[in-house]
Image (cartoon, rainbow, N blue to C red):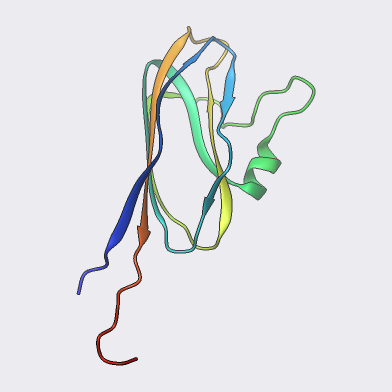
Length: 123
């Protein structure tokens, strides 16, 4: 029998960002086995990523430094599918580079959480 999923929308919003600006989501608590689809599109190139708590802390900028993204990895669209391998909090991060213009980014995060199947064989 195919796996059943409970679907929920974690984020579905337009996020305006000025050139050189960043945006961080609140943490999303995810469980092992969760399937997460992240998409974002904009009128301008932007950096995007979906990070575990530990990776978020490693990449977080300090004293005015920007959040770390690989130079040149900015695009006008972002898509990622993640199967969570252990329970953790995850953050979605967006940044518009200083050489890009102002952006209006539409971001959407869909969570599909596996549903425990009821057993009818007495176990």
